[in-house]
Length: 499
Image (cartoon, rainbow, N blue to C red; front, side, top):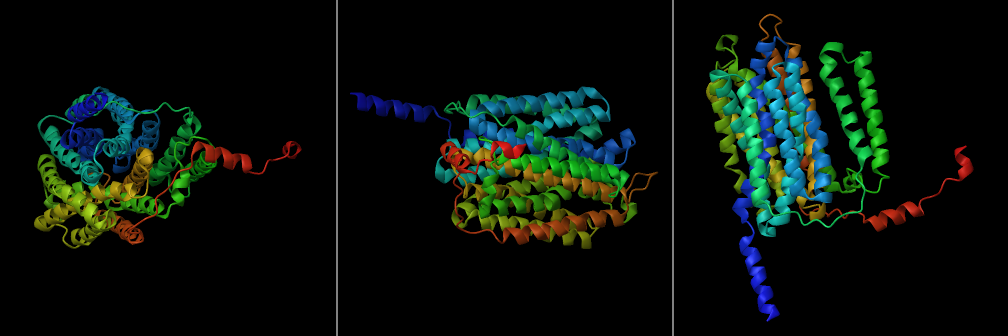
């Protein structure tokens, strides 16, 4: 009698559990919050420059502040999710992101916008947590498609961000963008709460890596601050060099600590795995290149007057519509990308997406001022981003165990956001150096230089991705017992030697 009852309970539990569509939809909505909060600002940058009378380098902080916090949040959120429960951490992250939107909404100054944007940056943890939850709750054969759709959902956010921001600016003001972001975070939290099953994490006795969590954002912040201030201070200034030395010094200390602590915030030994190291490197290069470097000069080309020779004369709303439609077109390819990754391997799809984004840039450079060619280039770029974002988590999943999915994906998010921050800082420096101080417009030489900078890193990302293996060796993390045995077997320093 107990056996039939057991089978009945198992069947009932299966019927109660949410299906593929419900889980993926809830996780896509959560990821849209993170990506929307980033993409909505690119259309807004020209408006903020004009309203607050600042240069491109200063206003770029509304993007840089978000990415700076997001870089550390991705790692810490992923690690804490693996340790304490991904659903629980995801709900906390969405609540904090909504609070940041409200601060930017009511602040009324550029400084308060930047503060709110920094708090919003905690949403950088969403993607790693979403990948971990998808792998945890979806059937194995459905994981590639589900993860591809979640990863490429940044394109939906790009579409919505550009579209909504454009309409808000033309019809109301930039304030409405943050109100929408706050509501979106609330809706995502409700969806996750009711759809995603409760965490089933075995309580861990490992202590959180508080020191590593503190050192990482300090190191990243110092380097990004140096890059952001470089247009004012110069690369040979004491401020730039001091921040760079501080950042590199803290990174060295952080690496030393992470290799010795029992439960590191980032398990740096994962980088001994060739596949993981190459994926992280290709991600960094692509983030500095087409993923992070195209948005600002693209919006300038769209919204600048046609009299400049390269501007297309779009309003903020029409530019938002165009960016949204091309991004949505790209997202339609994400399920196909997932199926191709499952059949032919994520490596091929990843390389194809990077290559397509790379080929788009020469087309843009050679046809500046041609509306039709620019629209075609944006559409192809949207497809390339969709394939790249969709394949990227699948390339990682092929090399990592399920228990470390969010941690590794969070590290990848950190790498990508550091790259995007670098792209924003250097791109702003290039554009600001070619900006008319009276009109605040950037000339064609500056726009072309920004695109060439992106092209260089796009080519490098493709070159590194070609080194990925089709059948990679899987990373096997050390157990706590193995770590303890390794530390106990290391040579001891005599007590008198330290004196």
